[in-house]
Image (cartoon, rainbow, N blue to C red; front, side, top):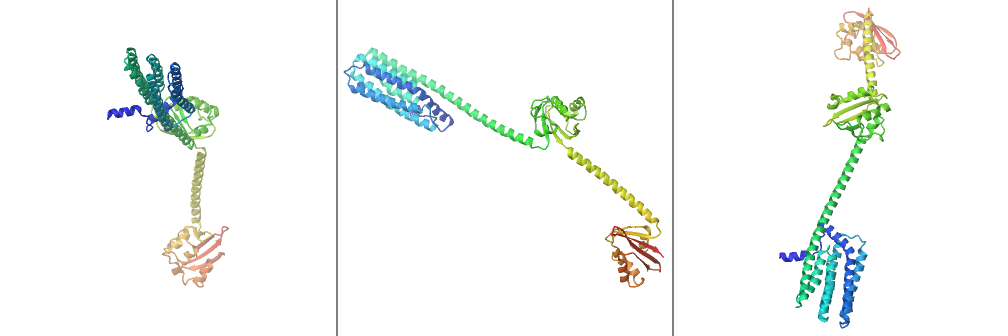
Length: 486
């Protein structure tokens, strides 16, 4: 079974199921158009040479007819191979052509061996050796030309070369026997040489296939790296902050567009590999350096706390910009930093801080003015109160409060004036105390008292005490009221 499998493998055309087999059949096909013209040239020369040395006694069919048919088939195949010389074929097409070549090799070699064996039976013994050598040399040349396609090469040696050598070996003539042995040994040597060359050819294809695969992987990796680099570049340049990476030698690794814009640097000048000192020189030349000398800045920048530790700094530049720098050290004394232009934000924060301070000062001044006004009102012997345009209590003096305190009432800012008079708020007893003690009915008195016109009235409280109350409207549609003991 193993022998049969080996025989089938020896004559099989390459498999296109795997990458190596596909590459192999294509390369075999590409070599054949270069070798086939030489192959058919050898067959033409040998056939013509044999026909010329044959005597006229040989029948015309053997001398001209059969070789002419074989040569016609050779010319037809030659034309077909020439037409395929510039065609790029797929592995499947190459496999079909190789199978066709294997069939043609069987037909041609069978035809030539039939011709030579027929000639052996008709020519004189003295011509057998030259005819055998001519045909055998054609067999050797054909097998060698088909060396990149071992199935066809092996078929040529088995169908054409082996029968000729065997006939010579069993001819009974010493010289012919010796010639037959040498021809058969030559076939063995040629077979070994073709096998060795084909193994080298396969190894070359394998190496080429691996190189192609590595090249494909390298191109795929390059495309992936390019895509990652493009995404990284887009991400960098879409950041709102400037970003820069420096290595341990203070050489720029990468920076984004915002970093260059923050410091007004020319992107054609600032390139990866540039030293920090050179970038600092550019910043001082365009006016985007800190408000300190270059030497002081470099000393500060190269100090151990700045290089080795995380730091967040706000720097004012000579051009008026305010930049917040977030420095983060990396392994190996390199660092990454973001540079954010916060000029507008800083100005807004400063304006808000100033406005807040001014508001706090105004509030303190208002509280002081309120205190001073209250103290001034307390000096007035009459009870005074200030109401807003909605007739709600805003401010009152001690005398005004004492009137309600004596009757156990509680005044509160924002209390409506009418509610105070009517006694509608919780705990009030004004209505009870005023009921029946005013000139006229309480309702009429209240209606008159709540009008927005100046008025005076006298009322009596519990225990016979009397008070005079009055109200005067102000320019802001509010009113002030007074109460005096009478």
